[in-house]
Structure formats: structure tokens, C-alpha cells
Length: 107
Image 1 (cartoon, helix red, strand yellow):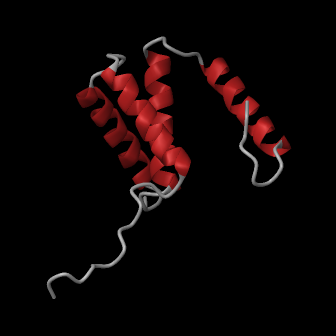
Image 2 (cartoon, helix red, strand yellow):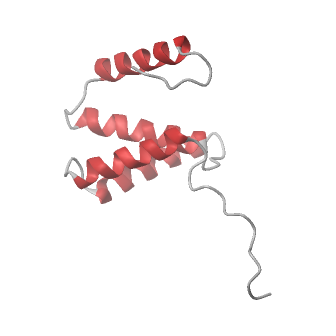
Image 3 (cartoon, helix red, strand yellow):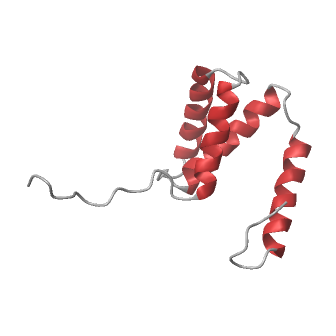
């Protein structure tokens, strides 16, 4: 029927960190850190690897694979060390755990 709204649109990202990770990846590509075809090939390989043991649903498991790919890429290119990434993850986890519910997490 003309003029009737359709079903509500699903948000493009299920979680804020999914959107942030996507935006960071696009930014790094746009600044020339890596070529998108290289990214796509690597991400596809990671998805295939993860897909062998479980079905990816486009949620956390999809973006966990995305993060794994991005971390591996920046490490291989010498832009970050695993120890730096691990320390940063730990700092964020510590900040999250000490932040009262409902408050923004600050590193």
C-alpha cells in the first residue's frame, strides 16, 4: 500500500564497537595504511577460517574476525606490535571494569 511505512529498519551495527571498528578500518584505508583489496582478501580468509568451526551471524563473531584481521594486518606491516595491542586491550578492560554502570568508559 502506497504511503505505508515498512518494517522498522535494523540498525547497521548491532553494537557501538562494531561501528567504531568499521570506521577505524575505513579511516586506516583512506589514509593509505593498506589497500582495500588486500584488506578484503585477508578478511575473507579470516572469515573462512572462522566459518569452518561455526556459523558467523554478522554480530560479535563477525566483528571479532574483523578485529583479528585488522590486528594481524597492522602487525605484519609494522604499524603496531602485539605487545602494544595487548597492553591497550588490557588498559581498556581495566577501565571498563572500574567504570560505574551507565557512565562512559575513559582510558
